[in-house]
Amino acid sequence: MTDTLPDPNVPGETIPDWTNQKSFVVVEAMLKLPWSGKGRRAFSCGFCHHQFEPGDTARWFFGGRRTLNTFVCQACDGPDVVERWYKFWAEVISPILDRWCSYR
Ligand SMILES: [Zn+2]
Image (tube, rainbow, N blue to C red):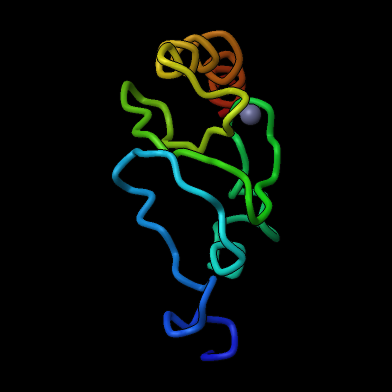
């Protein structure tokens, strides 16, 4: 187990606190975290699905309003990012969820 967990004493292995919803620079150690889903797919931008690499600037924010929290890359981030996220859910995700529910 210890070989997969980042060592906070190793330079470059310090994981930034992303839960404060502020931008951070992706470090190698973050890629070793057990992200949900296969591989690192969950650690990607919710808008363009860019998979984060060390050195990328990323941000995490609360989705709220029946969406999921997500990471956003620097290119997709902006002051209206939460509104765009709601719009994306309303136009793309919700219809898919509705379709799934109709099969039950
Ligand atoms: Zn993006």
